Image 1 (cartoon, rainbow, N blue to C red):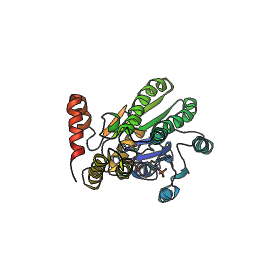
Image 2 (cartoon, helix red, strand yellow; image 1 turned 120 degrees about the vertical axis):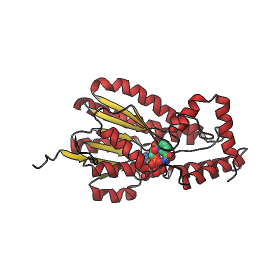
Image 3 (cartoon, rainbow, N blue to C red; image 1 turned 60 degrees about the vertical axis):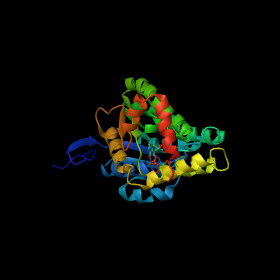
Image 4 (cartoon, rainbow, N blue to C red; image 1 turned 90 degrees about the horizontal axis):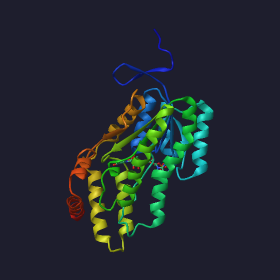
Length: 292
Ligand SMILES: NC(=O)c1ccc[n+]([C@@H]2O[C@H](COP(=O)([O-])OP(=O)(O)OC[C@H]3O[C@@H](n4cnc5c(N)ncnc54)[C@H](OP(=O)(O)O)[C@@H]3O)[C@@H](O)[C@H]2O)c1
C-alpha cells in the first residue's frame, strides 16, 4: 500500500514520522549544512539560512529552500520568519545553529567584537525564538533546538567571550524550556564537543590577530597554534555526529533537554565539574604553554 505523502521513512529503522517545516540557521557550512542535508533526506521541508547563499546552492538539489539571513539584522530575521510562515502556513522546528568563536584574552578583545559575538550567538538566536513562538503557540506545538557547546559547560583558556555567549545560551534555553512547555513547545540544547568544521580555524585566526602586538602575543600565538593543530588532526569528531543528534532532537517524540556529543563533550564537562578551580586553571594554562 502506498504511504500517504506526509509520512516518511526515518533512518534505517522503519519509524514513521510526520514531515516537519524546519528553519535551520548557520546552514552554509559545518554542522548546519550537514543537518540540513540529513533532514531534507528524511523528507522534511527544510529552510536553510545563512549569509553566504552560494555555499548552500548544492542543498537545492535535495529540495532544501535557501534563505539569506544575517542573524544580527532585525529586518533580515523578520523577513526570514515571515517568508516561511507565508509559504508554509506553519513552522514546526527552529534550529538555532549560527555561531562563531572570537577567541582572545578578555583585556584585549575589543568590546565591539565581544558585542558582535553576543549578537550572533545569543541575541540573534533569541530574536528568532521570539518571532517563531507566537506561530508555534497558535499551532499548539513546536520545537526550538539551540546549538550550545561544551563551552557552555566548561571555561576554555582565552575563550572568555565565547564562553560567555554559550553559557548564556544554556541559561536562556533552560528558562525557555519551562515557559514554553505548557504550549506544547519543546526546547532542546545540542552540546557539541570539538567538531571538525571551520569553527576552529576561525577562532584561532581571531585569537592570533587580537593578540598580535599585545602583552598576550606569545601566549595567544601558542594557543592559536594548538587550536589549529587540533582542528587539523583527526581528534575532533565529524559534524555528521552532531547532525544526527539534531535529527534525533527533531524526530524524537519526547526529545531530551540536551544532547551532549563529540570529542571532549563528556570528559571536559566531568573534569570541569570535579576538578578544583585551581587545578582546572593550571591544566588550561599548561595546555596553552605547549609549543607546536
Ligand atoms: N565546531 C566546533 O568545534 C563546535 C563546538 C561546539 C559548538 N559549536 C557551535 O556549532 C555551531 C555551528 O558551527 P560550525 O562548527 O558548524 O561552524 P562553521 O562551519 O563555521 O559554521 C558557522 C555557521 O554560522 C553562520 N553564521 C555566522 N555568523 C552569522 C550571522 N551573522 N548570520 C547568520 N549566520 C551566521 C555561518 O554562515 P554565514 O557565514 O554564511 O552566514 C555558518 O553557516 C555554532 O553555534 C558553534 O558555536 C561548534
